[in-house]
Image 1 (tube, rainbow, N blue to C red):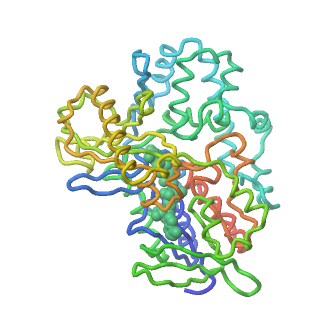
Image 2 (cartoon, rainbow, N blue to C red; image 1 turned 90 degrees about the vertical axis):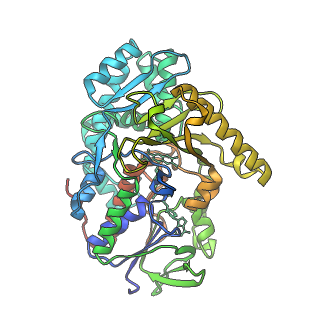
Image 3 (tube, rainbow, N blue to C red; image 1 turned 120 degrees about the vertical axis):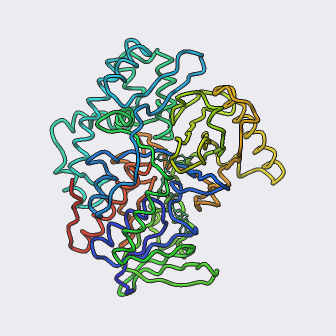
Length: 503
Ligand SMILES: Cc1cc2nc3c(=O)[nH]c(=O)nc-3n(C[C@H](O)[C@H](O)[C@H](O)COP(=O)(O)OP(=O)(O)OC[C@H]3O[C@@H](n4cnc5c(N)ncnc54)[C@H](O)[C@@H]3O)c2cc1C
């Protein structure tokens, strides 16, 4: 490897995607991953006969022209085996009313929402119109946020008259859209939207950018959709790894980056790494793509004065992210209700609303006749990180009991139905993914952090590019793949090359 190489830090979906794309473009690439496997928050772990998805359990962007489909087609690989969720989610509100069924078929979904939320069609139609504008704008591949002339040109050429209509809403929230449509008093609708939107935006409806929320609300329906991967979520990473190494890119597992010094004059970037034997190694490269939460830059820069003061300020003042508490369990399939959907959302006060993912028979996660069940809820990272070891163990047990009780009550199963059960907390995520305090899911899609106001993949430091779930357009495997694509386009342009991913 020469000093001309691109060093990519972090082998989650963002880092793997950036590495695979650049290696396919013929660049020398080395991907550094601290863990013994890739995937990060979209990875898996094994417990006896079960395979559990660590974080992400469903994917968007598998439809023709969707971001994962385009990337895999370009790399010359088929998408991993998967099925579209024709019932994407069943949402049970705490009021005991009939659960809301989020169908993939747009007509069925329209009929469902008309019955569940009478008088709200104006709101749904407005969201659909905003989404159409967003989607056609995104297809023209604008670069956002804009940081130089080239970025501006990409942004400008994507503008159309209707983009300005959406632009008027750039400071609006989903709550503002409800107000515009006179639906702000519909408490049931608001509760449903809060539950669903927070899964993607990390924020409530009165804090989620309208332009983001409008698109999220169309994610489950054709022509888009949500997919369930056969085998496990790791299949996504496996193919990207194969593509990377097939294109002569280098993947170094158990290589933790501990120091970064930027290039200056004729000197390249210097990246200090602890290898699998805890030996310090130094790598050199002309560009670095950093995929960890950007707050980590403040610790990882060998000398923080390398970072411009205003940029340091921006990083220091980023909003604190959410954490997650996740229960990983296994159950005899016979104990589950018949036709149990893959995903359920339960509106629960204590310990908080739960998002459940249940494996399908023969999908590779559990032996025949059994199912894995994963339940997650949002958590405050400071709370979990402030506990002594004894308090931590006690709290873990309390949360596990409460979550199990809520699931048992909803699915009408007995305590002894569980064949396996364990819990992870923000502390576990910090250990598994190296994310500070175990924050997951990016910055939150508040209008202040979204689109033109978000954190750019182009940094003020020459040769340093960012991608991952804190960078526009945000979280999820599809979101981080889009941000990886954007940073690759910018990096290629800085080398005088044009990189366009075919549609
Ligand atoms: C509970 C939960 C549920 C979710 N559900 C979904 C879902 O259903 N669908 C969906 O699309 N998304 C979901 N997400 C979000 C999604 O998983 C993430 O947005 C996405 O996987 C983030 O990818 P990333 O590459 O940006 O970051 P990460 O996955 O965090 O990857 C960063 C990588 O960097 C490595 N690393 C850290 N420090 C260092 C270091 N110093 N040196 C080298 N390597 C390092 C880590 O080990 C990790 O592999 C969920 C997330 C969570 C936590």
